[in-house]
Image 1 (cartoon, helix red, strand yellow):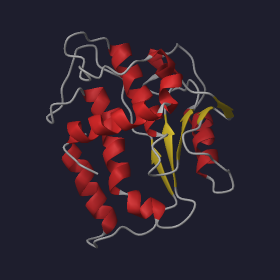
Image 2 (image 1 turned 135 degrees about the vertical axis):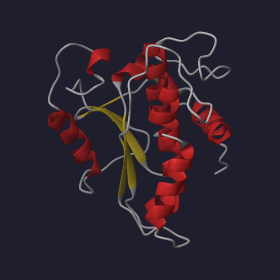
Image 3 (image 1 turned 180 degrees about the vertical axis):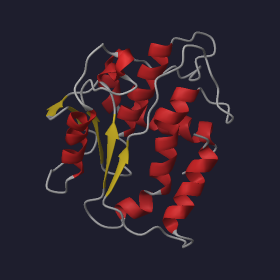
Image 4 (image 1 turned 30 degrees about the horizontal axis):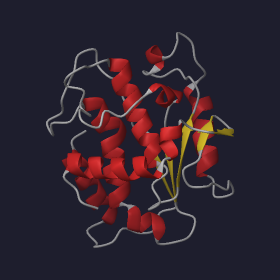
Length: 202
């Protein structure tokens, strides 16, 4: 997804007004498995980093006023337990020098999990379990149904479910994410990197 499409969709949500209507919940769910070969988007970003993280970052920032205008607004980020295996390659986020599809995917999930700790909008991240989706090949041969995984996401969207910014869930259990996902300096550094990569200064 090109970042320009995210901008257009945000403007559609605004309905031509200068400010989007209040929104209770945003789910950052779109994601792809990294391709076998290193691939850049038309924007010049590594494709899985752009689709799985940068597009979510941009959309969330654009809708920040709508999500924070009333108390209780939240963002639920559908992440992955593979974020624990990742590191963010700060000097080479597009992994031009050394590409691995699993490492690229894991990096995008770590970035998404780190973004949940950004203080601008209350957010949590969740690993919905290994599910029967197109991402299954990254994990195993068998998985739970997509509906079972979605139920864990829907629960966190429910205003009756109290959440704390930056927390991480493995299905329905609150657990500690990777240490890097809750470090203040990592959150700030990731924000600067994302703004640079999408050319959007929030």
